[in-house]
Amino acid sequence: MPVLEIKNLSVDFVNGSHVTHAVKNVSMTLEKGEMLAVVGESGSGKSVTALSVLQLLPYPAAKHPSGSITFGGEELVGAKEGPMRAIRGNKISMIFQEPMTSLNPLHTIEKQIAEVLHIHKNLSAEKTRARVVELLGLVGLERLTNRLNAYPHELSGGQRQRVMIAMALANDPEILIADEPTTAVDVTVQAQILKLLKELQQKLGMAILLITHDLNVVRKVADRVVVMKSGEVVETADTKTLFAEPQHPYTQMLLAAQPGGAPEPCDESAAPVITGTDVKVWFPIKQGVFRRTVDHVKAVDGISLNIRPGETVGVVGESGSGKTTLGLALLRLIRSMGDVRFDDKNLNDFNEKDMRSLRKDIQIVFQDPYGALSPRMSVGQIIGEGLEVHFPALSAKEREVRVIDALVETGLDADMRHRYPHEFSGGQRQRIAIARAMVLKPRFVVLDEPTSALDMSVQAQIVALLKDLQVKHKLAYMFISHDLKVVRAMSHHVIVMKGGKVVETGPAADIFDNPQEPYTKALLAAAMNIEVVDAA
Image (cartoon, rainbow, N blue to C red; front, side, top):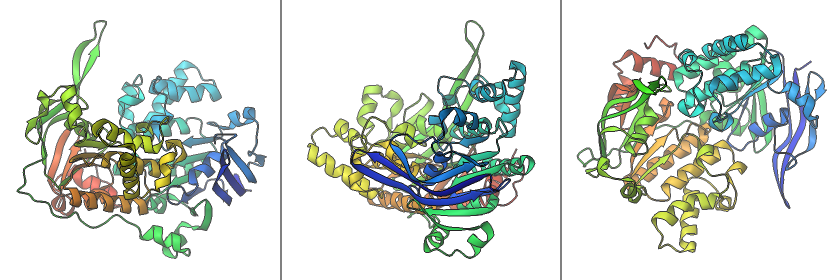
């Protein structure tokens, strides 16, 4: 008997007279100890199906016109809240796609993991702390065991994702629903997380429902695969068969889609758009009653770089290596030491008012699009807000035309401007964030994991779009990513970071084809599915 059985499940979202058919007659089974992967493009209904299992959809707007979900013979569709609370986080746990919006910003990491244990296990304080430390070690966060009082905003995206995994594993659930569990982590940590999930699956006999757009992940760990498109299941097969002999044209398209190619050559004699010289970002560590500074966390420690018009500098490294902090320092969104120059103007001499006039020329696409998009504004308002600030002479009609152009350029429908962020999938929200930055026609853009939430086919589209925009407008990019295949497709020059310092830097071809440092070799080995050597 399957541990989880979904039969003819349909999900509609009702908004007044408008009905969206998100899931249509989906059926699948999950056996005990099995890892079942559900794959498909953004908006295919993967996450909606998973959320239906735990009855976490926004009811009553979400409705089930048909279908059944049984867990151990117990019907979950329409189940009362009491029985569902006993199941959620205990018998069935879930790792959500966006950790920053799933973790409570007001509670420490220890408190949030301990809460799951307290509700379902009622452990003593001593046993709870020991279990929290054990869980953090399991997910590769040994260093956080000395920072249990840290808050989510003090962690990198990858660290937050691993905290979510620790919470989900706390009570040794029978089923783990993993919604894009490796989206925000770098390649070496991805290998660790996948190995951990596989080991736990075998050790505990735990069944895993894995939702992902990363087919490399599916190939490594899944036993069977369900392929979804537009809310429907188009193909189901064991993993080996699916990759060797895909039957449906859509599955064949997914397997063939890979970001590739190389960037167009840039003019290496051109003057840099932005220059950083010995950039440092040190965060003080304070202790004692008087909060004296006793040391510093050297997030960025003496990095220099130049980015020319039409050039992309890729910045790679593990979570917490300082990649995003370096980008924020160049944009003057956090304080830094050293010189940062834009068009040979020293930005350290600019106050906040002076910087505001430059914001249309220097933009950023953040890693977490849901956290970066206001839930109270429509997509049209979000994309058009920058136009109102920086181009006040534009009429409402002219602004709308530019918003529509930006949406179309990023592969979205113009009618989507009337909808709100929560109505979109993770990949669609990421494209909205890109449209918001590009609508201002900037000269320098920091792209912080812009493709991490996107499926393979859309990744290829976004990479092609970013390249086209770069060539057309001579844009300078800093491309921050843990996905080395995308970095190679985008970058002219690559900086490899670890612990706030540059480990290796040079032309992209040299870094990828002839890496010199052990740490760089380990990153590339993990990306190419080769056994990772010790990068310490």
